[in-house]
Image 1 (cartoon, rainbow, N blue to C red):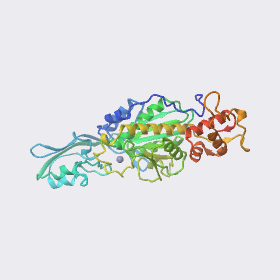
Image 2: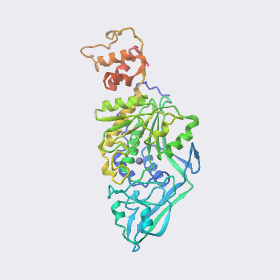
Image 3: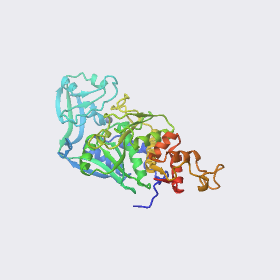
Image 4: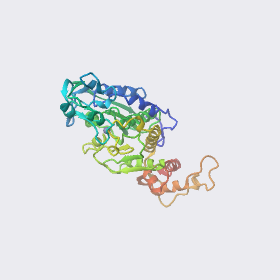
Length: 436
Ligand code: ZN
């Protein structure tokens, strides 16, 4: 245990970590899936910035009600006319392959081919993102415009892919703090060729993790880069018997688009993390939205299930599924904004800053207001040295310090920025007026 006061906060000048927009350009083209080399390559890139432990869980391992699937290795996928002209080619876009497609190498009739092609009639130039994770099928995805142009009676299809015994891969980073109480930070690493969902989440979380690694920490931080759903179920299965003390959690996904920040609350709705995020969003001074919990979403669903009930909410921008570019090739690097990525890194840092300082406070002089002047805490014209004590913040903390309220609650109720409330609480604690 290091000697760090309870109020210590990661310093904002701690090493900045990678630039999220630069990292996004590197992660975007990798052919990711639930398992296989794309996930490993992604974790290797992230591992250049943070000391990630990479876990491999073998195919067939029982994980809660599921089983770790076979590993999918995709080498090539294309459709050619019989003259050898490529009409669909994985080399042009990672979304062209149906995720977990079984292999095929055959000349097929047009009708049969069309039954295995996935397009978007409403957006004929976009390639959809489709997977066949839990059924065996071959298929490709393409722009509807291309599909509609397939007029030959026969085509040659080749999907050079393999479903084989291997493993599910995930990345984990544990950054110990002065207490074992943990903050869980997760994002999914299984989507290919889409920037907002979810290169944005990977880049923001990598930047935050790099910053946390260089910061002083009261709390312990556990950062997980998981293939969606199966990854979190696998992690939960491996920790169910001895779950670490996770007090707060954020799943981060879809956080680079032009929309404002959105927080989907934990199942508990008003866990300390829900209150901390609400105050951080308010203090950031930008528009934001708070959504009630719903079991539709990303890995927060698994963490909030009744057997675990870990307080994990979902931090995003425009909610998944509500914008037309979602799960299509239109979710490209132009769809995300470097300034938004940077602002989201900043927001998560401020949430961490609140979690580091937040605490329940109890007044040691609760009978009417204590005399502040005697303790150097009342100076109507400001202190001779340093900052003037923040009278309003001091009064709010003293009034609410009944052992039932957290500092975030006081910040929310008073309308004062969290930093002012926390500074006032530190001053009162130093003067012996407050216990925490
Ligand atoms: Zn998605």
